[in-house]
Image (cartoon, rainbow, N blue to C red; front, side, top):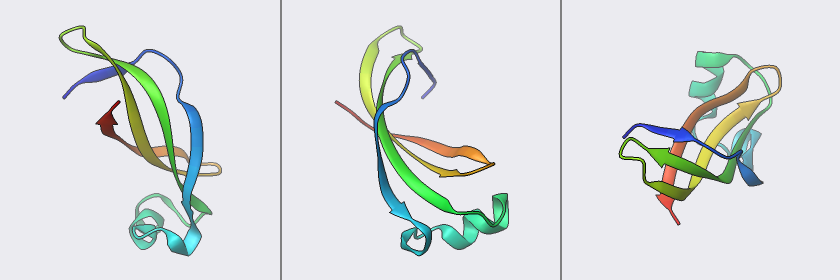
Length: 76
């Protein structure tokens, strides 16, 4: 499913930090050993068929590396 984020991600919350992240070892091997956090937030997106939805996103983030593996979780 292709989409475009048309408004910035808002209401950002930390879900997990450091050893609380299940995928921590894989993230460190793939992107580097930093202080990883799993976050969630909400954004407005536009799909290929031009329909607009408010959605929840989850992603991983580390200082100096940025957002990685952004996943759309559900439509609101």
